[in-house]
Image 1 (cartoon, rainbow, N blue to C red):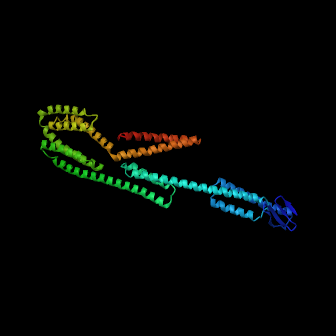
Image 2: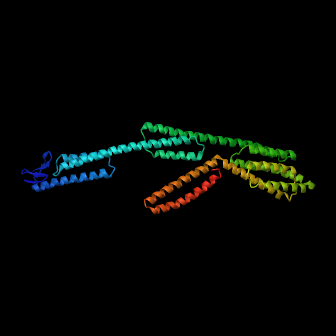
Image 3: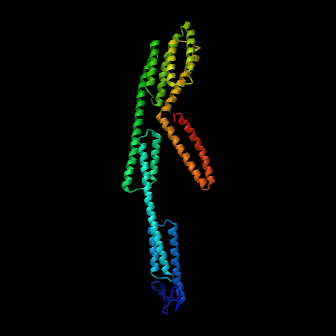
Length: 409
């Protein structure tokens, strides 16, 4: 008979293992010596020890699920309970019991973590809904629309809640987006309608202006052209392409009339010298309006100057381009100032400028965060590369902010 501290082989070849509950039969051995029998079953014990060690490391260092860990523990426990190995089986049971406790603790930890993540996801989605509902009332059509699209992407990246809560929040979120889209659509439809009305009104003004271009009622027609100009400015702006075409026709009709009137007045030679002197004085008075500081006052003053200009009559042909050119330069300055004022107060242009600035600011902030992270991680090469990209984005942001100042901030 042969034995060791944890097992023995009797004279019949039966192998036993010693446990806290007494000896347990391991198996029968007939093929070799008792020492070989014990060595064989001791190797089986060592194999179980290795498996338990591997499982312990997996539980501690990987994200092995509680279900898979429990299945593996049960499998090893069955091997230990079947007593087909020689060694300290009671110690193995204690290790397995400790593993069960560890797995259960991790299960509870993950359960708590999942509950925390769910709570955080709910708070995050509620915040997204609140922001979406606020944006739904915005009139910054471009920037608000872009922000709502970004919120959708953020929503998709968050975990799902329970079905009832998730559906309720999504319904509010979707409703806010739909409300904004309807308001934006209605706004631009109204804007298009206004521009179409302006186009129709200016079409009528152009038709009348063209019909008057051949008139020889110099004073009456000139007065009517001034009235038509007043009506033109009051009509509002049409679509850009139509506006430019109609304006060219309107000015062209006036030019024909005033050119014809000028030809007739050219015959009044005695008056031409005095007319030129008066117009030069008016041109000098008009030039004092430039640069334009008060657009409304400048327009009124120029209108007054222009009315007096029109009442003066013709000047010598060779002097006309120069003196009229001076007035036209002032008129162009007023028109450019008026266009600049329109652009400055145009909500669409303001929204585009604000939207671009917001995007660039977000990109700059993101790059700065990435640079800080790279520095903290010791990745200076990446930080330097990101810093160069930041310089370019910052330059674009500075330029966009400068442009935004032109709209009053």
